[in-house]
Length: 349
Ligand code: TXA
Ligand code: MG
Picture 1 (cartoon, rainbow, N blue to C red):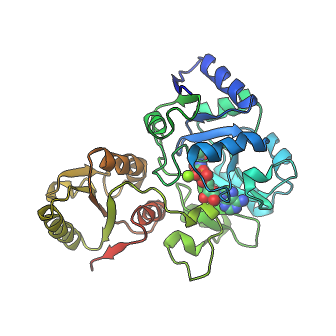
Picture 2 (picture 1 turned 120 degrees about the vertical axis):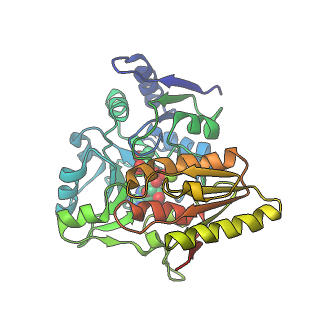
Picture 3 (picture 1 turned 135 degrees about the vertical axis):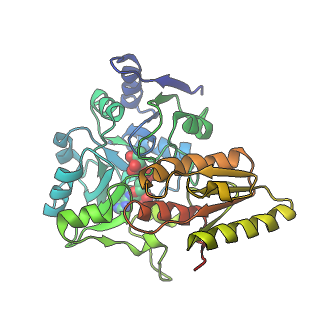
């Protein structure tokens, strides 16, 4: 199958119409959202959604989330909206937040992996909204990467992972947030964050008074426990290189990374460092990439997946990444870094 890449420009309906037609006929289309690119299919068709799992190589017990572009689409897919969920919707939709809600019988088991709940998101990206409206369907869409790879934040990343496997990629330029949506289970007495994102714990607490974080987010799973978002159990975001996150005081982090880099290079390994802008000049590695300024966590979040992919492009064997405090968007950044590093964080204080 040939994969077309269509740049979507304001006021040009042609690419959107083509994409909507593919979705209505049961095919797949990759499209931009404000978080990451999604791989969309008709969310009411089990057969269409099956193709998503095949294209991504995704385990079939990892459920998909449904995207809407109008609250009027909710009753079709969700049978109840608890009060806390309603407050969250009013505050943060459209935007980078997914809510876990009780599903209706119309939502196929292929979407939810047999769960009685479904994840729903109302994205703010104009292309995502226009596509959902044009297709006139809830669109099931996981991130448009091959399973296990960093989520795509540009159309080129989607093409790299899925070339030949899907008919169309809508190119809407780079994604503004760059990290996947915050997933919140608001079906119980307390809102529980299953995956952190740009809608932060602090923002949810300011709204609801309290917010819990699923232990899987911080890598704190007791033996035998399963994360409440099935996808959190899989290795993810991993470049081909080994990734080590180093966190602590500025001097210790720089010294540790430089000492280890020297060792690795003496063994013939190619080393890349993901550094904050303030520290980038201090590293002696084959490649040093700037994540952005320390206090600009939005920029760090937006560049993280892109730079993990860049590490592969330059053929790094070992990647060292500076760690962040788990506050604000730092919780989401560390969650993705922890997964990229297979859980290994070197604390050097
Ligand atoms: O920002 C995003 O959320 C992007 C864009 C495309 O919208 N989508 C995305 O989808 O990241 P995906 O499939 O890569 O991640 C969705 C996560 C998975 O970890 C999945 O296990 C979890 O949501 N999930 C889906 N349905 C769920 C449910 N009913 N209960 C708990 N977790 C669920
Ligand atoms: Mg994903």
